[in-house]
Length: 310
Image: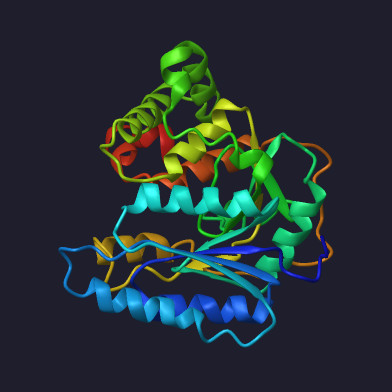
């Protein structure tokens, strides 16, 4: 895989044409040779969805470079979890490796080269399952001597992976039933704290039972159950632009995300770690950031002294 050409890209879109246009402009600059676009269908009960979905899909028609484009456009709405999961399934049925971008994840141009080099370097290392360009705790990584750090946390605002890794995706959370003690041990090992482990276990169970309509908890769980590793960029390469008038809990989420949304380009040549190992200080910072962002604020309320030390 060339380090100067973008790997294949899966672009996940829905009903936000302006967000889609901004991210598509970055994809255009990277000029991938193969682009996959997966779009969920409009919701019948939302009057504006049909038109916004049409305008969003129309953005892709502005392509002006030589590129093979495959589309998976659904006529009816599947919802976040099945739509994204099946879109990624479709992508890796056709590609050995590639980048996954959602319509609100605006990457720095260095993100594409970073992913290309990382996908090539770790292509045959089954331990590494996930590459993240998004780093919500970049401040904690400022003094690391390498371009990326290994972690158990899989941040999904701009990421890359391989077919060999995605084949382990388990949306049914089988091990929680078949080998619950081992599953709980692997969860506890990821966060090094019993209260945090119980919190994550609860999220996994609620996702399994359909209470949470999201796909990323299952991916995080799948990495943990397979004792996999995530290679996370030491600087934040992706800005989330989705926290605006169309977002839920706009003001609170914008304030939270603004703390770690600043983008700093990757520097080349990349500086690689000598071994696959995690830094417990950085891992705590990742956990802290994930609670403030994607996983909610519950732990700040129930155990601030344990998880949110300065």
